[in-house]
Amino acid sequence: MRAPEPSFAHLRRLTDVGGLYEHAVGTAVRTANGYCLDDVARALVVTCREPGPAVHDLREEYLSFVLASQDGGGRFRNRRDTDLHWRSPPSVEDCWGRALWGLGTAAVCPDARPLRARALAAFERGARRRSPWPRSMAFAALGAAELLTLQPAHDGALGLLADAARAIGSPAARPGWPWPEPRLRYANAVLPEALLAAGHALGDTALVDDGLLLLGWLLDLQTRDGRLSPVPARGHGPGDHRPGFDQQPIEAASIADACVRAYRITGDPAWAAGIDLAVDWFLGVNDAGTPLLDGGGGGCDGLERYGRNENQGAESTLALLSTLQHARLRPAGTAGLNGAYR
Image (cartoon, rainbow, N blue to C red; front, side, top):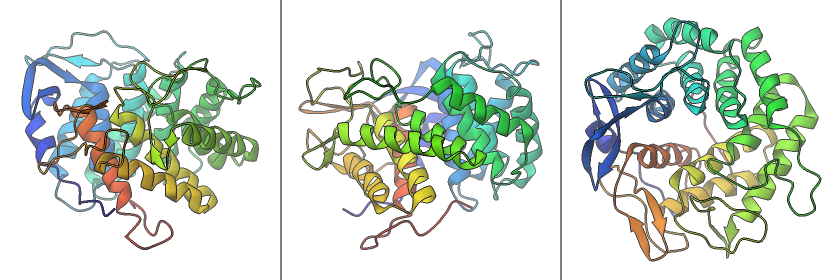
């Protein structure tokens, strides 16, 4: 199935001078909940991936938000009201990891050279911190991996990758459940992707092998009758029945991200096929037979048993845009990825 080009129309609708609104009712912006760094950092990654000047203004807006959210010690505040006051304390939770992912991506973005120095300085300040949460460390590791594409000897990035791999750990010895957690939760593929990124950057083949094992297991678990069947919002553990609902776009997008990295490291076409599963899930090849996108560039907030959640918030819209960007790397009729973001 041929994927459409990403449209940034709805992302622009969700964005104003204060940041990126978290929620929408249908396509209408819901301003009451304000802005969220988790979403803005994702948006910084996506807009840095987009070639050319089309989203240059959005990149600047999102980077300014990320920089403003950081405190002097490298932590980040997650939530901001429409009056531009922060209403959450600085932390090293997921917003810290995602902010470092965005900053590391911006620091090497070829279409954002005036922004690179500011992004690098903020990344380095934040990368001195560590989080006790493996997912937060995994998100941060992806930013470190991006920075290493331009500065392969950057000590802070290399140290962060090594520590992230230790935080995630090795595949578990449990029969039939090698996942390092007792349940799958959200954006699950970020854990094996971080292991792949760390192993590739550090020259550690054991880490690469662990990442491939976990990603392959996760992809097999979330494939049903030849289509992607992501775990539901409540998570998934051994013995839970499938399919589960509501399925979340962030899970499909993280599968696409991880499969892109696995393909680039190994050249194995099985990982390119994983990208196709994620793309097709958004286009309607899913457990409800329902597309998760509309013509205005918005992504619906979840797949339900008999349809979809029609609200088009920032997280889901960015998950769609990210996955469609990956689809560009696999033109119809080809057997593998043929391009790169830089």
